[in-house]
Length: 110
Image (cartoon, rainbow, N blue to C red; front, top):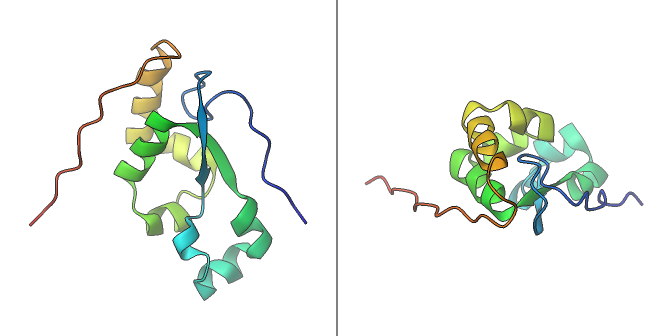
């Protein structure tokens, strides 16, 4: 059985050395979707993990829906290529490892 990748010690987006969280590149909510299962396979669904700092993790979910994550941004390289995520990670990369940005709440649309 394949295992999740080991913790690299640095965020895979901003490269800061801080506490990391596991980000499922294919969101768990999509793991029962038959098209997603056919596209990736069950093992890949369980093991495709990115190690992200909390700030990058929250920003990824702020920018992209679960469907977009599972279909269009299912690798770290694709996440890095997203313009909003890329600019945030570059900005955060210049901050100290213990820096915690104040993240504004997502505005709800009526």
